Length: 132
Image 1 (cartoon, rainbow, N blue to C red):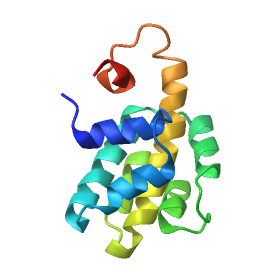
Image 2: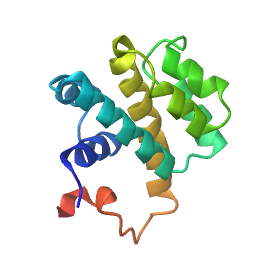
Image 3: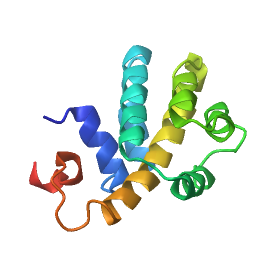
Image 4: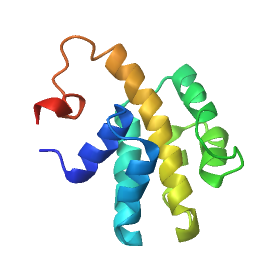
């Protein structure tokens, strides 16, 4: 069963909502819940299995300065899991930029996965939001 968080993250990835809409939604939560959403977004990113080419393309498309800490961590740590673990520990003042970074990379990676692996006969609930 998909949670509200799952649905919102995947709606953004599938361009059913835009960046402003998902940030408006994200901003209504307290910091503790925002951190939970960031953790979920990290898990979604890992599940989308970005290859190196997709990952590098996604990094370039993040709508933030390339010096944002989360982006630097993604570029610096060659192991995605290690980078995400470090990113989740960033201070509260980095939360919004962290979320933007992760959902932006997830959007590109998940789109690639939907267009290749899941094309035609996808059974993932999160890829079939119109059927909910």
